[in-house]
Figure 1: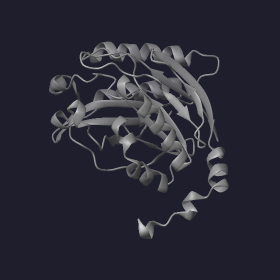
Figure 2: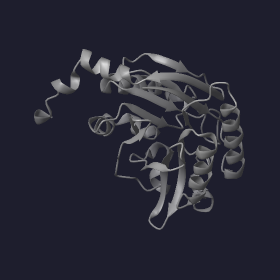
Figure 3: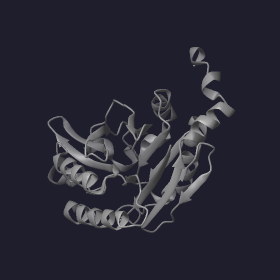
Figure 4: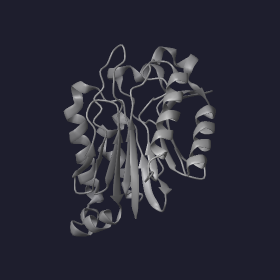
Length: 262
């Protein structure tokens, strides 16, 4: 199955959902005006607010309703699947860093709350961690979504792959000082799981961080098919999930696993 994937690597206006929503609408319109529009559009982590964590009680999306309404409409209008990055979702139990995925009919096919909160950026002080993970399907391709710091936890990602995932989507706000880790971990997760890794990072800076950009698509052999630099960019690449089956049969690591000793 071939899919054209588009990653929107954008700078994010700190703590200003209105400005960021307008920017995303404009960028999606730009992408979908192409002669060959993509099948899937991917956005970065916390793209509505950035890391304005102290103001999240004021600027989070209550129950994710605004995000769901916006992308349901855009997905149906453009007839495109949207991996809508993540947004801060406010509910009675706290604020979560929540990833939504919409199919081209505008239906929410996945909602995932970031499981691993990075203390280095104070997430644990303001956010509530998620604890569930469920793959989803876009055009018959089984996929899974994770968020930024989750990339450092291979056992969590392997859980999704053992449940059938062939494509991993990873929205992020990964800082520039750990760019080498970002690149190495994206490639490692692709190789060890023999799957595609589609990692959409942000560009630009906020009052406390400079971000790395370098959104990338890595194939199941660990080859980088496309990669941005540090600036805002739109990258598009075609993936072929038949390659997952081919590579998994070439080196049958899943058949050779010994979970009884792990």
